[in-house]
Image 1: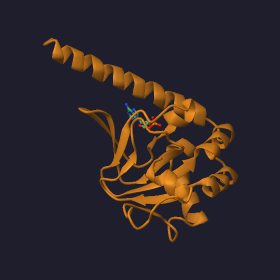
Image 2 (image 1 turned 135 degrees about the vertical axis):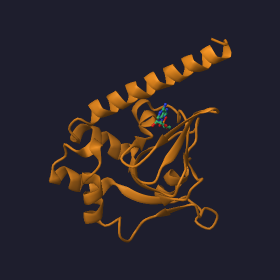
Image 3 (image 1 turned 180 degrees about the horizontal axis):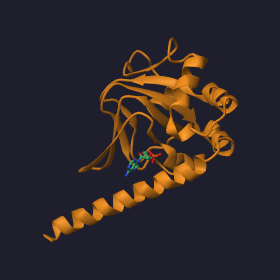
Image 4 (image 1 turned 90 degrees about the vertical axis):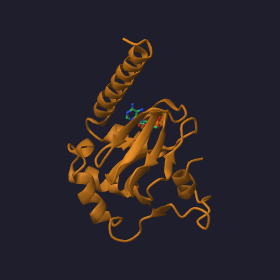
Length: 175
Ligand code: CMP
């Protein structure tokens, strides 16, 4: 299981971990979370009431640069939204995509139940909003436009992956 999943279900060994921290002070207070969530494009159509519910189901984690947040092939049970910092999605050994504040990842495993499609590594210290699988389902029903945004993002990611594969194939063929 992934680091954050183990922290959330209580099986994480804090003595050996040290590369991610649940945030409990400023930043994790309900009001702080609401203010940050309000700035996220994904939630721009949410009412104050919806933002309050969203803040209740969102946990905040600080992750050290270099830590692996999700590993390709492993089962994943969390959806991640980047609050501060950036992550590197290792789509393939020679293809990386950088995601920064306001961007999200981890939606694919939650949508289709399959393993993580890529490894995701913190490329700077990162503050993440984390939502569990169970709460993600509630979110899909409650947040207006979320399903559509996820579909658009997924289509874009597939298209980019195909374009990169084509470029690689042309490069290998010397075209
Ligand atoms: P998931 O498969 O759950 O875990 C790895 C995540 O990396 C995946 O969800 C997406 O959120 C993200 N991801 C996969 N491929 C790409 C891509 N080509 N561009 C950006 N993000 C991606």
